[in-house]
Length: 124
Image (cartoon, rainbow, N blue to C red; front, side, top):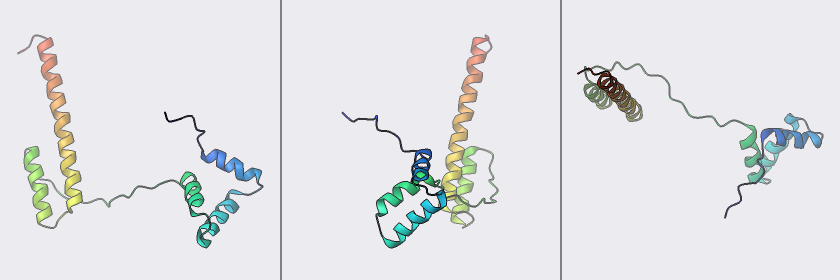
């Protein structure tokens, strides 16, 4: 059985540790970068830096693409047409069509809720 009671190494604990060594945060990071540059203990450097520095997610630039169509299906076809015409990338199209699918699910839930309320209220 796996022991999940290991103490968690947090940024605060790391900062407290090198403060006890009489190092400023900047000196500590400088030492880590120097160790990485010199090829000394790369795993420790990566481990500590991953906990000190935030991990940024890649983002895409906003696009301007008019989505035409009366139904959600027509809108999805228009997006695919935009890919074939080089107006948007395949990744952007996939995200837009996925968003349309999520919207369709929300619309369906709203319609089911409305029908259920109508049934509960004795409406036809």
